[in-house]
Image (cartoon, rainbow, N blue to C red):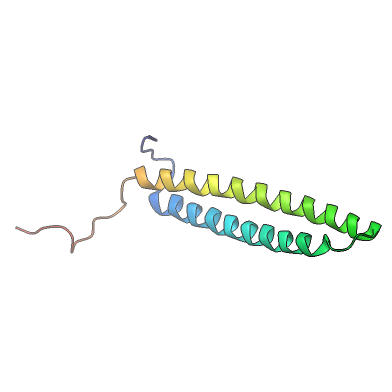
Length: 97
């Protein structure tokens, strides 16, 4: 389990987790769209169609890798945010005597 540090704030780590999660989602969508194009291009048996399929396969692999990397980064930043101390105390949540 990561240890709390003073290197980054909880809000910063949380915002980084969100940014990486959004990037992961973008690449996952792009990978799915490229997979759909690849499936469609498989019907074309011409040399141009095969080249197009190869290009789509490369694009799909690139987006899939980037999505996986972004998920890992989002998870890492979420763990960092989870172990950081909150920077403020919510007065409504603090019991009064």
